[in-house]
Length: 459
Ligand SMILES: NC(=O)c1ccc[n+]([C@@H]2O[C@H](COP(=O)([O-])OP(=O)(O)OC[C@H]3O[C@@H](n4cnc5c(N)ncnc54)[C@H](O)[C@@H]3O)[C@@H](O)[C@H]2O)c1
Image (tube, rainbow, N blue to C red):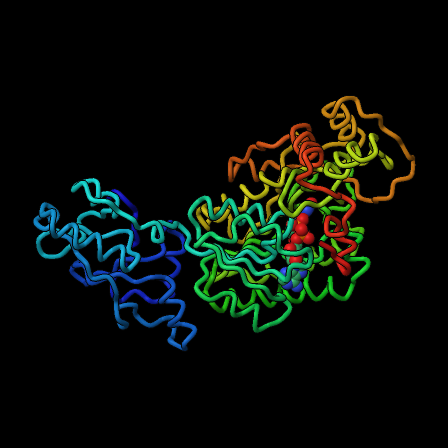
């Protein structure tokens, strides 16, 4: 068949059908009878709704009403008027694929709405159905990484729901706010009702929302534990009950804390902050929930850098770029400590790769996210940025304010997802410098650019 659409027998259990659809790039399956004749289609959303309403997962999928019973024969495929009617119906019901039936009703091939349109020179407009993974819930989608990810997901045709309490304001998602595929929910993940409601009609969940960074978590320990651990656990648990298998959890290489060796995913963890400890705790809880219904992916990212509509100037590359502009000098504390860096756009691309990957390749697993080539000592970061921005002087302070010192191995990510970084720190530093120079960012001292000031965010 041209497209590997899932075909299940009418006796197939709802559970098995959901699993097969989850592992495919489609959001629906064709249901056939014992003789292989087409009976109709079933969407994963409808199956999830059945389970939530109390239907047993081992019940047969054919026992419930099927949808989209459009079957196409060679004969009506040749008829332009019939093909045109079919295309309109498919657009109306958001169906992207239709089975081509042999005499007797067996599924012989699968055609997409574009195939039908091309054959008869018909205009097709079925963008809504062309999503490989439907709707993605991005919790924390107005944050530094979240707003970049949301925009990229929309660009790839996903429907996106952003749930965010807008600690740092909502301006970051202004540029995409008018997109018809974006839904914005203002709410707190710690509210159980909001948390569960946000899962309606969702295929994949990305959990970014957290109290982020060592200083912020130190200032707000209670909120950190509530958000980073308890709310994360509640969301993961609700996903599992909703049969949302794909769950991407944003963790951090800070879980390694200190380490002399290049650390891979099996290395021992030495957290040096509450922030890192909450991330480790959530990793354990979420991975522990993994089973046939729930296949979480833990993404331990390096320290992010680069321009984002929700700019953060409390991340090392961004701080140095900003200080080069405002003070004409880069300050380095310590300098010998190792830190893996990762461009914010690259990070967003990794999330998209995970959403589009075969769940068997990425589910129930931990990945370090970054690249071996971007493990840097802080001194070197300062030198690269200083050079990129025109020989900015570097002021050194021997005291190391940050206890973290670790080099990370990224082989697994490279092998499984073929990830190669596209961003570089010198180019990103120049971009940030230009945003400041051109006035796109007018006052980098504003509190909204720093996570540890979040209780007094100002516009
Ligand atoms: N930035 C980095 O260098 C880095 C590195 C490794 C891992 N991470 C992880 O990536 C994720 C995103 O980081 P970021 O830099 O984009 O952070 P960020 O602080 O810019 O974004 C977090 C977002 O979550 C929202 N949020 C916080 N608590 C919430 C709640 N209770 N309910 C709803 N929304 C809430 C905030 O309003 C904000 O928009 C975090 O989980 C972080 O731990 C970040």
